Image (cartoon, rainbow, N blue to C red; front, top):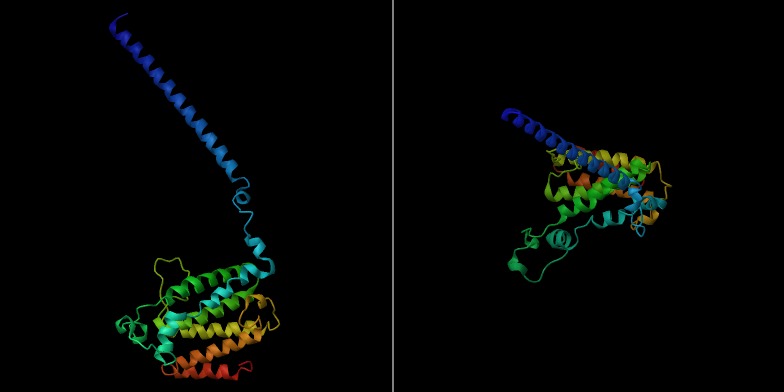
Length: 263
């Protein structure tokens, strides 16, 4: 056998060894992949029950007695007010209801129109708009529309105050997933507020005997007629607020509020 033939045989043997190794590697990969598929498949079996804390209340349990929808309302209404920072140190002071006897913080503070402390914007969006969005979506899914109506009213109570402080705010586009989220101008906001108040009042008027708000309502014990009065009071307040810039609209809305027998 000459040298060339020996070299060719060596090359063939080497190639067979390489193919055999590659075959073993492929087999190992297939075995690993199959094992992972079995493991992952077994992990998803009863996945939800395994990851549910048996000592915590579930959403399904909260649906009893309307707790899933009603429980957020005490927090929603609590956060309608700015408390010390926005209430006491701002409007109460500016209107003379309260005052400070000393020029604290070198007289550079909210009482002297240097707005150094203001958390109302974050409070409204984090503690009113966000949970009310969840309530509205759940109410629509569970076919309990009056809870959504109530949440919408609380939203207007909150956002009408925020726009008085900050001007344009995100309202009609709140919750959008678009890259660009537009603010609502004040004129658009008030027109939308009045339109929504019409719808809210109609919903309440058609359900005056509805009693499911009772245990979630620290203000009126779930009395729908009282909430209808809130709608009219809010309508009148908003009408007075725009009376100098949109007197025609203010007149229509003010008269609508005053003419309603539940005011």
